[in-house]
Image 1 (cartoon, rainbow, N blue to C red):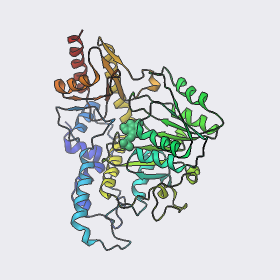
Image 2 (image 1 turned 180 degrees about the vertical axis):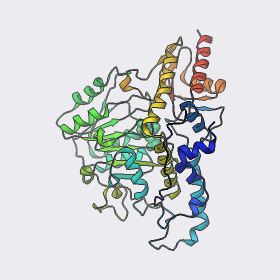
Image 3 (image 1 turned 135 degrees about the vertical axis):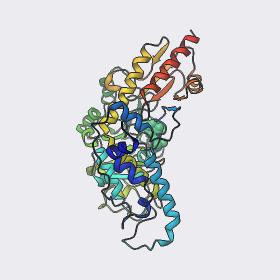
Image 4 (image 1 turned 90 degrees about the horizontal axis):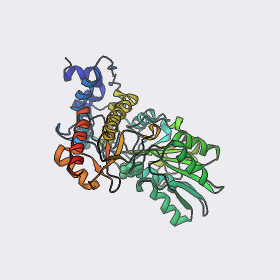
Length: 437
Ligand SMILES: Cc1ncc(COP(=O)(O)O)c(C=O)c1O
């Protein structure tokens, strides 16, 4: 029988235990954030699959009777992440008088250092080089930094879809109003039937004036997974800059920015990576960094030798949330991106198969395997979207999010969800459907 203690020593030894020890924050190494190498994570091949996920669920502070399926809005940080932030914040407040500004001393705040220790981990996570990663507060910052930073001129065109989240698109609209560029919104067929339809949308709308393709990796409302790799390679052949909105992706699907071949990629780790709220990053491919002016200017705004650090001149920031972001990456890596993706896609497949058996239930998100992910959007005959959302909560403590009518509710499966929570949702939907037929 696996006890919680052996589970952690086997599975999450470094990621969890290091954060839990109060001494961790106080005994910070000479230079803050220097990786201590404590997280030597042992593979967990010998832990039975279902036992593993049930044990892991205990690391999340969501009450056991509540099934949380709204990661698309905000993820839930596991205890090691939460503890890392809280302990570090306490340490900052208690020990700030010890700060003597010597180069060997720990740092109490972020905003004036390169923060290589955490950028390096983000880079490893998404297959980038450290100097290509800028820390931001979220995806919205990343999108704005790219849109604002590129030198575009009246008449230049930016293509995007009509499915963008405002945090993936409005920076381009601002640029259009202010500088006279032309933003074309491509109408996505709902639901798209195959990846080729989405590729054709961009290719057919491109003209000699097209400078940028802004591409959502997974859309917010209907969870459409775009063929980003194919699109970015087609754009590259045409000399077009690609900016990919990965807000819904990092921590969800495995991301390798080099394989995708995009020029810029931004995300919000406080969603699927389960990081502290208010964390984000922007990747800009090294050979295109020179083209992006910084939006925020402080000491190093014009230093082109520091890579993407030039794009994170944000002034005083909260170092403690970066400690939490680091732990969230460790936690994710300890389990593994592929394993997480396999698990949560499996839960979503279970949900989709169940929905197909329920009279009156309609899946609104795509069903072509290449366009699906761990998020499903569905409607139920006789139920308005908001009433459906509320009833699932009131009857079964299942939290999904209304996407409005006629779309229904968005249901995101993550590693804190269990098969029984998916099954409970399906049983409740079946009963609700029967009531209104
Ligand atoms: C696809 C997409 N892009 C951008 C955003 C904006 O994210 P944030 O508010 O974290 O910047 C969201 C938020 O839900 C999103 O789903």
